[in-house]
Length: 346
Image (spheres, rainbow, N blue to C red):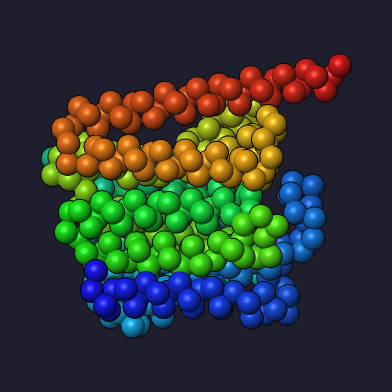
């Protein structure tokens, strides 16, 4: 790592950490506050401008190291739009359809600039399938990571782990510029973590969690993870396994229980039935639930390291192994809920 890269990472860290203090005051003045209610754990109003602190760290780092801005300007611009849109939502709630429409437009712009899932033979059918999968991937990870932001430090700490593993693999494969962008994001999230973990004094807000989700969705599309197509898609799936599982699990359970019947209802529904909520429901404290998910994320990251530049069948087996583990976790959560429901009736 050269001196400029180290300085870029350090500046991102320092700007985020120290910006958080005045932003807590500003949040109360502009109404960017998360008020406690029945479906939330915190008991007092919490500022929602953590995303702005992370964004400031990223932006200043990109200004200092113009290579980041030059090579990945469309990704950073997209993250900026996501951040600003959801900042407005944090202050004055926007409709879910409007937010989804903007996310869809951004996904199409990203694809138009040549960034998309690429593992099928080129041709009309192959290209069409890849475009559809790319849209689903970007929308799914962006919103899935937002839903993960339900316990103190959970989303922020998970992002640190995600970005670190992306940084390691990118460094091994000689993709230094994209690796530096991931390292900067890991540093900014790490700098915000003291403000956000255990009795948080500040939240990411939708502006922060969706921005992180968007970057975690697009950066894997920017990188070249392996020559083999199966390994190429296995690595991002493993590293981002937790938000993928959470999105899939909650969607299936909500449809099964009849809580959502239309796409519009799915967008609007908010409940305490996500992965982290379920861990708390079955007996873990919020702190231990966060550590459990961090450990799961770290384990999946190690699996991604192991399959990097290996054979396709190993990538398939590793993803299947992770899927089986998540299936077992899902079964335990469902059984735990049934037992709790039965105890409650007695």
